Image (cartoon, rainbow, N blue to C red; front, side, top):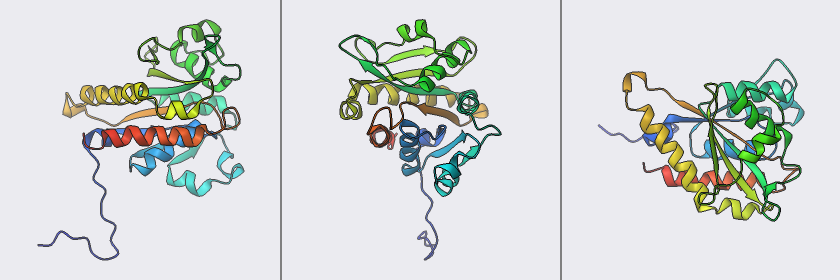
Length: 232
């Protein structure tokens, strides 16, 4: 019996088990959030997210938002959508700007990104300077990783050094860090197939206004990550 698809029928896309495990989510802010979801969608992975009330119509992206399974919250503020997305995530990848000359987070890193990091770690949606001092690049991996203290999702922080988006896209240490996190979470997930379930990964970071080129840069970055994992 032929297994060829009937003319006009959409052939099913078969993903490797690892990529099937993860659903990527974001609040769809202009910049890093959108880039991550678009890359996941191209890789035929699951996508979803909560956005502020009326936001999709405001930015003229109702059709794309529906295709990405984005839903509006009952509130128009960004705080609510961030908190809901974080609570619904098993892991969060945040992208922050780093000033290597002064060894500190760059001015204008983005209050939303800072607030998300603090909400994960201390259940307090605010800008916490002491926490930011902890979130600095590790000497070897150039990443920062923390586990939330109150059953919050795992947090991995990636840095854009000196606004160099191209360097970020090609940062092999970051590709490995994200791939290894997804591999580890996948292996832990499948130990007991009776309790197996999909895992939600949220991505957040700078806006296009704060860091021009970051939207496409993040999309290209995750294109590389998903290409690496496609045969696993």
